[in-house]
Length: 192
Image (cartoon, rainbow, N blue to C red):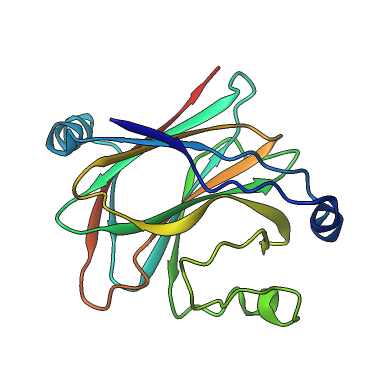
């Protein structure tokens, strides 16, 4: 099992003023090798299995819980890697239900975000970290940038302390794949 903190670079005060959001601390990320055992647990529970088609991004929206202080996630895939990232949508009154959003990679929903020149990363680069986005009109901070993970070889696990009230966005990104659909086995839960 390996344990490390993700690429959480602290930003200077000028950057914080530009974006106007509190700083979000880096999550803890680790992995374990029991992929088949984990997938078997998820299959037997009849929950936590997703099909991410080629060219799609699935977003699992998980609101913060009043009785929780941390979110934990675990996931693995069959046969191939998958890009994964975690975002936090600031919302003082989040909905209480976990929801799932499916976005086609050719969707133009986020084009307005890239209209100005103040964002330095290319929208087509799925591995480029972004400090802040607007998701449905709500400010969103990057907790863990979207990167390809070897989730077919190890169970990817992580945790993050709530920065405030809002909704966590777990992004399973297969937009780079032209032909392969991926099966994701995941679970997310709260902790104190």
